[in-house]
Image (cartoon, rainbow, N blue to C red; front, side):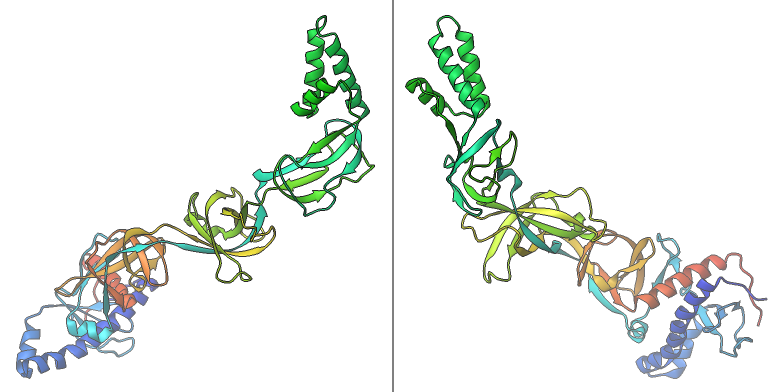
Length: 422
C-alpha cells in the first residue's frame, strides 16, 4: 500500500535519501578497509535492525521489505535503527547522527561559536550645512531708511558688535525727543521717563546709546545697527538709501566655527545609528584630513523618494576648512560590543526563524533555533541558541537540514502511517 506525502516533504526526502544512498554505498568499502575483512563488515551490518526500506529518488512510500521501487526501478534503501532521528526541541527537525566517513562524503565542514568584538559601520554621503543655532538674521523693529552701509558685500567676515549700517527713522527720532523731554520733567513725571526709556530698549537701542543721549541731551538723527554675532555674512538685502520695514531681513550672519554634516542614511541602517554615536567625516578634495564628531540628531521622517533619513553630525570647524554645501563621506561606527558569533555560513534562514546544527563528538548534529543580531560578511551575532566553544556545521548545511526534516517526518509517520508491502 502506498503512503502519500506532500510534495514539499517529498523534495526534502529526495535530497536526504540521496545522501543516505551514498552513505549506504560508501559504508561497506569504508568498513572493509578499516577491518580488513569483508565477512566482519557484513556481520557488523547484520547486527543493525532495519526499520523499513525507502526509494531514494521517488520517496512516495516506504516498504517493510527490500526490493525495487515499482515507480522507477531503483533499489530500495534500508533505514536502520538509530537513523530515523531523535526528538529535537526545534519543531519539524530531528537530530542527525553521521559517521566521520559520511560527514566527509557529503562535505561537512565545521567552525566554532566564539566571543568577538563587533560593531556595525554605516557609510553615507553627507553635505556640510550651517549650524542653525548659530545663524542670525538682522532686522529693525521700526520704519526707516538706510543711510550708510559699513558691511557692503556678502561673504564678509564680521565680529560681534561691529557696525553693519546706520538707519534714519522719524519714529525713533521722535522717541528720543520724548525721552529728553521726560528727562527734564523727571521730578514731576518719573513714569513718563521710564516709559520713553523702555520704548527705546524695545527698539533695540543699546544702553550705551541711551546713556549718550542722556549725557549730550541731543537726539541723534540715525541709529547704528551692530552685528549680533561673529561670523560671515551669508545674505544681504540692505542697500544705502532703501526704505526698511519692521521685521524685514537685512543681513543673515552665521558663525561657522562649528558646522553640521547632514548624512543620508538608508532606512535599513537607521537601527544602527543612535544619538552620541561617534562619526568621522572626510572629503575627497582634502586628502589625509579627517574630522570627528558625534551624531546629535536623527530625523523622525524618511524621504519617500530616496528611502533615507537625515542624520546630523556636529563637527568643529574653527579653521574654516569645512564650507557650507561641500559634499563629504561620513562613517558612523557603532561602539564595539563583546558578543557571541558564529560563521555566517553556519546559519540557515528558514522563513521566520534561523537554524544551525551543533556538531557533537559522537557525530550527532543537533538543530538549534537561534535569535540573531548584527551580521557582516563573515560573522553573525547570536543572542541565544548556542554558546561560545560549541562546534557548528558550516558546509553541507542544506543536506543536513533536509535529512533532519526527513527523519522528523518519518518518525512522525511511523506511528500511524501505512506501509507498502514489497
